Amino acid sequence: MILKIDSIKIQLPEVVGKGYGTYWRYKGRYRVCKGSRASKKSKTTALWYIWAIMKYPQANLLVVRKVFRTLKDSCFTELKWAIRRLKVENHWEVKESPLEMTYIPTGQKIYFRGLDDPLKITSITVEQGYLCWMWLEEAYEISNENDFNMLDESIRGAIPDDVKLFKQITITLNPWNEHHWIKKRFFDTSDDEVLAMTTNYLCNEWLDKADLKVFESMKKNNPRRYQVAGLGEWGIVDGLVYENWEEKAFDIGEVKKISTIQSVFGLDFGYTNDPSALFCGLVDTKSKTIWVFDEMYKKGMSNEAIADEVTKMGYAKERIRADSAEKKSIDRLYTLGLSHITAARKGPDSIVHGIDFIQDYHIIIHPRCVNFITEISNYTWAKDSKTGNMINKPIDDFNHLMDAMRYALEDISMGSVYSFD
Image (cartoon, rainbow, N blue to C red; front, side):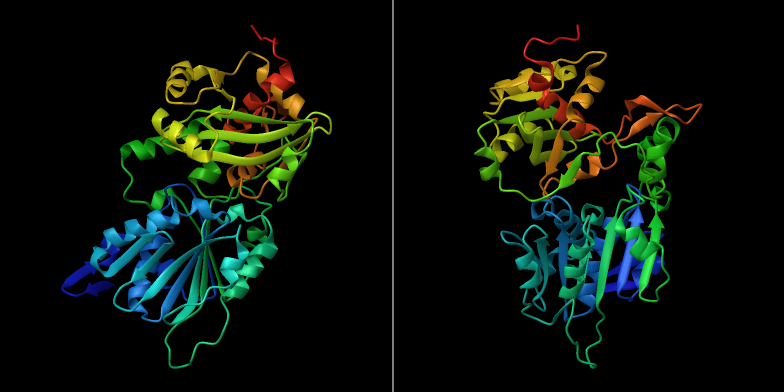
């Protein structure tokens, strides 16, 4: 296929790469792709939408994630990349306020919405053409199938016979848990209107030796994660560490009115392969309840970036317990304005002790804390490599916000003078 824009000719196979031919050509109602990290699923989808909007002059796109604020650093960034990759920057207007993209020659638009404001999804009226496509990214975050049904119904309405368009919802996800409703609905069924496929990093010809080495190390050192994050297979989850939780919207202001409530914050450091994670919670020791109301979860963050982000979130003056293995980073964050940051008190039994304490509490998670929900629904006890039996130690995975939560609750779980030294 060749894309022609003015005098520019682009050979799409050279730009897109291999592994997605069927995906690219499919025109059925549901196009579903679960894949590993670095499988090109999001980049290929972004390229397809930029190409397709320019090909179909009356098509408009709605891009959705569970939480609106996560769109700018994910789908919006991927679509900007796709515009540059196709060398069509002069044909697109890209706005950050409101988050929106417009194909200048026709006025077609790409809209961005979050499920945390459903009225903004159901009330979209396009200015030119028809709203016929939707991209649901990181669909694993959507735990309630009824939320998807609401989205599905928003891509309705007749398109005249003389208009050469088709309606389609594209769903992309990392398949962390085999019990997710997406598996039963799209992968465990046979439907002419569904393309359900699996891709992985092995079809990504753009990866270099360093990228491939990450997966080879994962394959050797963490076989369970490799099956999902490497090969794109469904995650098999058993032996959850925490089962005492629920996802439920709540009014933070009302919770703060509880006389025995305390705010707690914990920070786990990461960088290249792991995210830096900030846990933001409210805890009531009387009712034994933890409310999880906010989070930070990003890779590649310098200390300066962490300080900036925490400040923007409004938590610079809060008492934050941070990973004690990063004492230099803690000192730096203190000088950058996180004036109440202190080191967590780790020790040989601190993980199990912290888990035992938290297991006595009921955890209520605000729907916007999508990374916390992903972690807690995949955080399991490790297994003995020889017997396959579970041991009294959690896996070293899905644990960034889990560790941050333990740090945050230290003073309550251990007492102010408790020590593992």
